[in-house]
Length: 377
Image (cartoon, rainbow, N blue to C red; front, side):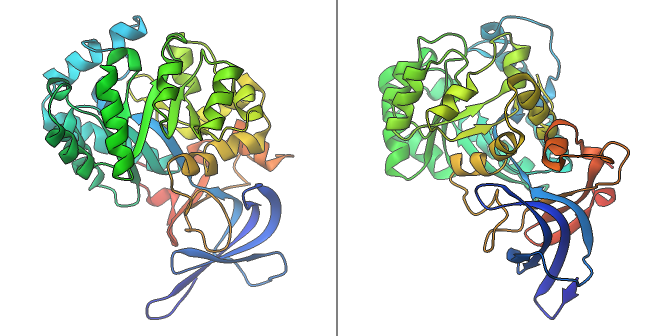
C-alpha cells in the first residue's frame, strides 16, 4: 500500500471477475481514491493481498426489523408475516431500543459475511424508517436502500404523510397487492415516480392472483415470483420491471422455488436477497450455494445475481462490478484455507463452497480491513 498525504494506492492480486460479463482474469487490481484505477496481468509489484477477488455482495431484499424473533415456530406464511400476523404482533410488543440493537447486530453480521449494500423493506412508517437509520449509524461501511411503507394506522391517511415518508426513504416497498387498497397503491407508486424514488412489491409468493395487479403498477422490481409464468416475465420485460428472488425464504415458508431460468430467458435482470432475518441469516454465501445447487445455474450467473444484478436493480450501478472507475467495494477470498485449497474452478468454489471463514479481507471504497479485524470475529 503506497500512501501520500491524501491519496492511498492499494494493490491486490490473484484471480478476479472483470466487467459486466464477469470474465475470469488473473492479475492485479490497483485501487486509488476509493475506486478501481487499473487492472492488468503484467505488473510484478508485490501486492498487499492475494486471493480470489470478487465484488462485495449486494443483498437486494431484506426485512431486518424482525431480527428480534429468529426461528419462530412453523406456521402458514399469512399467519407469520401477513397483516396482523405473528411478526407484526412481536414488533408491536418489543421496545424500540431492543429492535434497534437487534438491527445493529444484523448489520454487523451482514458486513462480516461480505455485504456492503442491502435493500430493506421497512415496516412501521416514519418511526420504523428512523429506527433503521439509527441502526445504520453504527456501521458506516454498510449502505442501505431503505424502502418504507405507511404505518398500519396511516394506510388510509392523507398525502402529507406519504410526502414526509418519501422525503426520508429511497423508495416504497409494499407487500402483496392483495394486502392493500388498490387506489392507495396507485397513489404510492405515482408519488414515488414523481420524486424519483424506487417502488417495489412482493408478488407471486402465495399464489399468482396478485401478479397482474403488481405489473400494472409498473414497479421497479418485484420480489419472490415463485408462482409466476413466462407470460408474466414477458410483461415485466416489456415494462422494464426487474426481479428479485429469495430462494431460502421460499423453501422455509413452503412456497416453492422461483422459475429463475425462465426469468433469465425472458431477459430480466434478476437479483437475490435473503428476506426476513427471522427465517434466514443474511448470509449471501449461503444464498448463493442454495441457488446454485438447487436451481443448477451456472456459477458466474449466480455470482452476478448477488452482486452486479442486485446493484442494477437498486439503481446502484457504481458498485457490484470490478471495472476501472467503479467503487472499490470488494471481497478477497483466501485460496489456501482447508475449505478452498485444491479448488479447480475458483468461481464455482466461491459460489458453492466458500463461507465467511474464507474471507481474507474486505475492501470498502479503497480501505482494506482484514477478517480478523471485523467485529465479532
